[in-house]
Length: 455
Image (tube, rainbow, N blue to C red; front, side, top):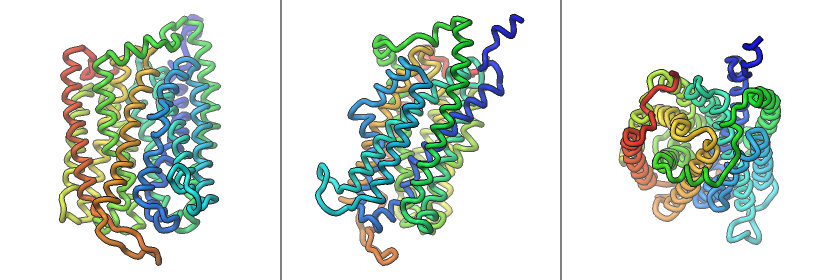
């Protein structure tokens, strides 16, 4: 009888993994929409007459509201004050609304006529929609991360985070694989329309999870688990930012992801223009890092749970990132097999670092500060996800146009990507430096990052 009263829903492996798979579907839909427009850069330029600078503005808009209106900070406040159920549903609604605005912009709004704040109307509205989607997606990200910390505390946390990332990468891989063929067959807007339908399904999935989480909270209340019931306090913000581990994790996060996600936005075009990969498979090649993460992140997460070495793994992943971008930056290497091999290596690095980094946050901070910590880290990450795509787009337009070509009767620019790849390589070098400093801080402050998660 006592066992029945004290066993919580999260203690049952089937229940906690079911909860994970439900919320992971929401993130999978979010990742699909986040990446679905990247393979369509050429069609946006030829069909809607966007420039690389406008594409960079659109891509960077994902993080605009998170950075300049501090929406992720508010998201962390809402998460810690109102809980994961309310915040997750709110985030899913924002993603649906933002994607709807983006779809409306590219299907119903002309690029001609009066500008809006200096931008073409279709570019501005699409960017605004993507910005709203970005708020929802990032808040959903910190919410799901806290869900895993709550449901898998003292259990397979790194493995669970790895599985969630892997399932989300299915969305990314699907976007890169199908976006261009579907757009060619059914029109430019169809891949995004599919994404909107997936997000509606993700909203329904999160509503289903909320029922499970409500039952768990009732059980937690019976056992008086006070740590998880503490609400947001501005003292938590002060405690988080005073922690040296926060700044090192946040810097590594922004530098690492700035070398991956913005690069992937341009990778399809790089594969076609520089390495001669056909347009039918260029998107698939650009999505190989997501495919690698699908299989490898759970493997690395399970390894870290059992063996530890998280700080060392983050150093290794950063080294691999330097090698990938450094080789891409070398002029004259135009072998398709090399480009594909480098994308596979990038996929391994893309699996190593997140599988070590996100569980490390749960070691550095207590449960009551996790929402705040993740929100602040994601906020800093979004500065890079906003600034780097805009920088690369501007550099391409100003310094990298080497000619023009006719694609399906329409004239588009041809770019030399050597300078952008040098920029990515420089950022990766900084990531390596920060990863080394994090390992030093681990020894100094006793974060136990090198220790295994399962005791």
